[in-house]
Amino acid sequence: MKPFVPKLVYFEPEALSYPLGKELYEKFTHMGIEIRETTSHNQVRGIPGETELARYRNAKATLVVGVRRTLKFDSSKPSAEYALPLATGCMGHCHYCYLQTTLGSKPYIRVYVNLDDIFAQAQTYIDERAPEITRFEAACTSDIVGIDHLTHSLKKAIEFIGATDYGRLRFVTKYEHVDHLLDAKHNGKTRFRFSVNSRYVIRHFEPGTSSFDARLAAARKVAGAGYKLGFVVAPIYRHDGWQEGYYELFQELARQLEGVDLSDLTFELIQHRFTKPAKRVIEQRYPNTKLDLDESKRKYKWGRHGIGKYVYVDEEAQELEETIRSYIARFFPAAQVQYFT
Ligand code: 0TT
Ligand code: SF4
Image 1 (tube, rainbow, N blue to C red):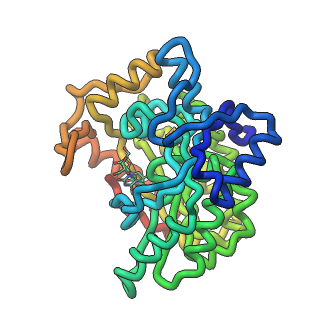
Image 2 (image 1 turned 90 degrees about the horizontal axis):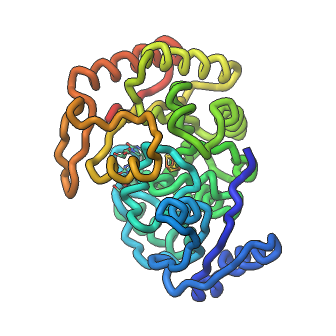
């Protein structure tokens, strides 16, 4: 698929006083993309569309260039100690995506140009924990790889972390546009993960993302560039024939990774979950979705702060975990499963 190009771009005036802000302004001007001004990236007005749904779709094709003011990083358990805020929002249309509710009324894609402030803050967190390792997750609130061909801020983050002693970087993507990252000086401190799933889940729930084969071609490239490689299997979803579907996934993964050094390969397993507000939003935005959001079939898990979520009942979750772990053990005996959640 072609790399993402926004249909409309907004700039905070202050963003233009940063090198990346200037660079992006020139780039989008040259590309002939409509540019507008916004006082704040938190309050973008006037995204076109006659209906709520049309405005949502247009927002997901809108890029907002701003300055990150909150420099307190969110925590990102279980994948890392901290979320690294480089961008918020995504052009993909995965039906199950949690950004639909976590971003509320702001589904547009924000990128932050004050990278030096962000990296200085990351350094502070690293120093606080040193000599413990501090991991940063750059894909908590966006698919950062999918937009990075425009900004190269992920590339700078990779090189920033590469130069630290105790920092580590990780991110996960469903996009294939990795070429500009292949020569980054990662210094072995970045784990590059791809999101994979059964054919059924990709076909029915992941429109607007790269195909499985394209993700795997990208995975081979990043492994060839010396990055640590990982796969996030998420959401693990009980569709008809899921056992075969996931079996084929691992069989195909093994086939496509033949010849790749898999001595340090990780898997992260995340079962499907949803909240009540998410269910309402998904039904409005993807009214024909096959995603099963029947609360009565699920277990309610209280949230530590805020809203609880519906996960599979214990017996079903356990069956998912054991089945997937057995496939990994069979096809990738040396790989490490970091967690099932
Ligand atoms: O609904 C998706 C689920 O996936 C969430 O419970 C987080 C989880 N997740 C996503 C995960 O376990 N591993 C990952 O690598 C993620 C891609 C990254 C991540 C995101 C994470 O590890 N922990 C998180 O808390 N998040 C998100 O950050 C969820 C929330 O929107 C935000 C702040 O908590
Ligand atoms: Fe959400 Fe990831 Fe899909 Fe983007 S690619 S819509 S962030 S699940």
